Amino acid sequence: MSSNLIKFSMLFFILFNPVILSYSQDYALDNIIVKIYSDGFADVNYLVKVDSSKTSVNIELNGNNITDVIVVNENNRLLENNMIKSGISVVTLGSLSINITYSSGSYTSKIGNLWTINFTASATTTLLLPKNASLLSTSIIPLDLYTVQGEQNVVLPASTFSVSYILGDVDVNPKPIEDKGYNQVFYLMAGLYVAIFGLIVFIYWRLGK
Image (tube, rainbow, N blue to C red; front, side, top):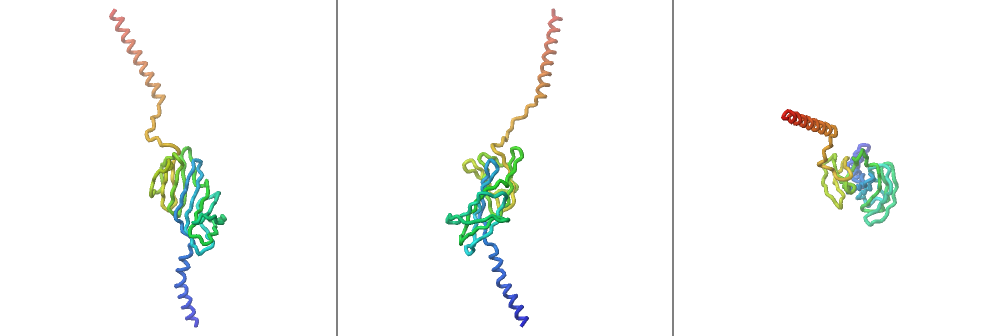
């Protein structure tokens, strides 16, 4: 009796455990869009596919100091949501997909004129740099680069990445820095040579007389 019970329990575990695991993830990120402004703040958009059989879902979000949160479903219907420690809890009410938008200033840092964006993405991410920004470097190879109405777009794979840029055009042929000290020596030497030459001419003229 006991042996049969053990066998039945093992069979139940083998048959139903994969199903439990397959439904342990209630959502899947489709893509992320991050629009950076000239002051370093960003608007972030998550497009998320959700399990329509669920009434709510908890979704991990990247970033701190998240504000201005708006969540809508595929019918553009506003959905109730609450911020939680790891991200956001959304009342999906049988939705197939949801769109989460929010603002945050936690992604960017600045040293002098150099801006750097650090972001961790679990889906393909399109980064929209500020208008007239010049891309300097990326920590990983982009999937695509293109410009739309003066905004440089950088498409990056799911990963943790760092992107650096400056506002304005990069001067690829900078003017040489004028060495004032060198110029002063040059003019001094030129004046000395002129004076010596003049003295020689004067001496020959006197001797000729």
